[in-house]
Length: 72
Image (tube, rainbow, N blue to C red; front, side, top):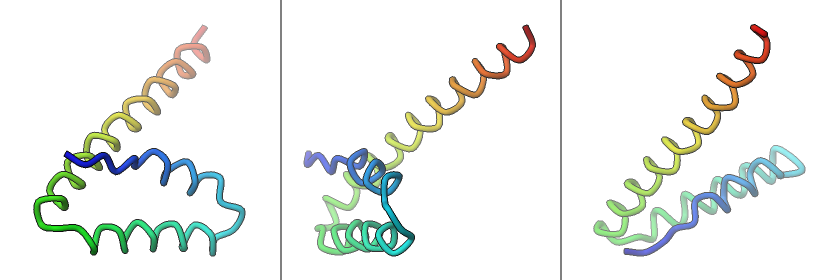
């Protein structure tokens, strides 16, 4: 299985200096996806889903902790 290092795209997008830079990073990711074989697209999609789930869980954890602190 190929590792697509989706976190690096995410970090680059978050640190982009402009909307144009964000769009260029997004296009780079789209171009990568378009270049993949059907088998690699399946791996990519699975890795993307896993990445999104982990990121959302991390955000929820921070949010829950902040809410808990606000209640105290």
